[in-house]
Image (cartoon, rainbow, N blue to C red; front, side, top):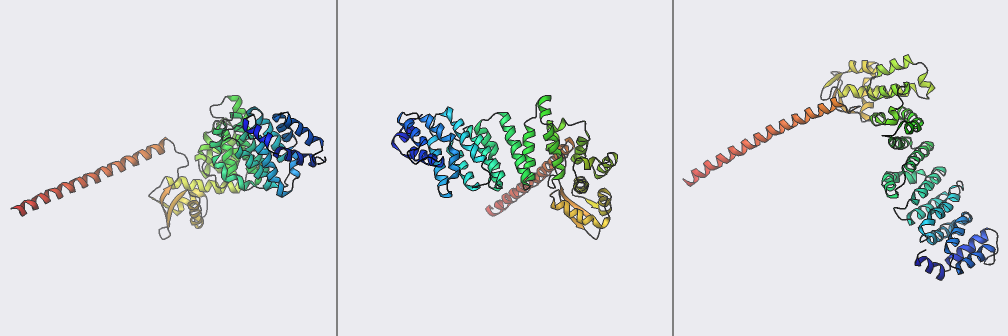
Length: 403
């Protein structure tokens, strides 16, 4: 233990104050009980590791503190273990956080604050921060306080890199976060994104590891169908854990959502009666999403062009008088920018997303860039010629004036 800890224990009564509180909480007499006296004896013998271990093991007693004393008492304990020998810190911290996590929904905000204080008092690169973060996640999820944590999840990958945790721990954390977010019912899209992060850790894995990820891959595919805002299936499709699902009907259905049409979806449903219901999917929601995606594909093939209402109606398998509603829905979904010409009954497409960015799309992009390059070259040539003309005219005027 550092000299700072020795000085703290020897010259300050804080450790004895904490020992007294824990002893009283255990039903002992103040300053005369066994816990207090044994702590006092250990301090006199400078057995500081034993003192910290006693405090951590009995820290559940602090959960009974009043709201006024709750955080100060825990902060005192955190201060005492801050300079403990590094090799015992993981055990001390886990002994402290276990009862905090297991104490139900009582004092949720205070418990989260204590865990946050503990987290922040550890070194930024301490692997023990992983355990405290998991505790924060579990308490926040159980007490309905995930909204406090979710904004900070954007920094999680950077934190994981700092903690230096093993791959299996990273996988466990991604999966736990996904499960907790999904269970909340409020963060289904975020839960899906962390499920993708989990599955991505299996890329370049062997057959055994891909088998481990199979259930999560199936869950991810189904969630992609269910979540209304998931309209891009390319990242999901490319994951090796998802590729390992083939051959299967679920994988075939994913391929349809990736880059195929409403007609092909309808043919799949007809060829596989009962499949949608068996997998807990919604036929109505699937049709809605496939219509949006099919319209996006139609628009992508006609960027800067016009698409007739009757063509759209045929593609989406809807009456022509519903076309405008569907066009508005596709625009709202961010899949395209377009204007409707009600007189001509056409849609003028300004922009559309590509459902997949294949070699064809790369070639189209290359062609556009080359066209822009040629246009810029022509513009630069015009400017250069204009400068030459202006220069020669200026020289002529100067000659006339001089003359």
